[in-house]
Length: 73
Image (cartoon, rainbow, N blue to C red; front, top):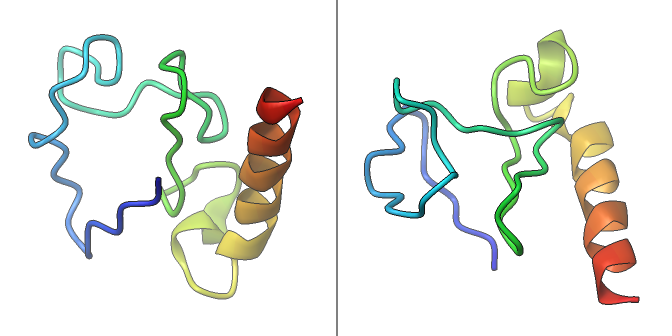
């Protein structure tokens, strides 16, 4: 599932244990979380400075897609 959240960093709608820190920020490693099936994309500094920009998100998207594909095998 892919959920586009817009331009604000508000993750308060995510009510999944282990998905967010005590400060309400995503817990992830390059967009991959410890929650099966939950990934983040487009976060500021997800893997590099341009991760949150349209021209910079493609490398992160490719990485996430590869992780999802590995999970399905």
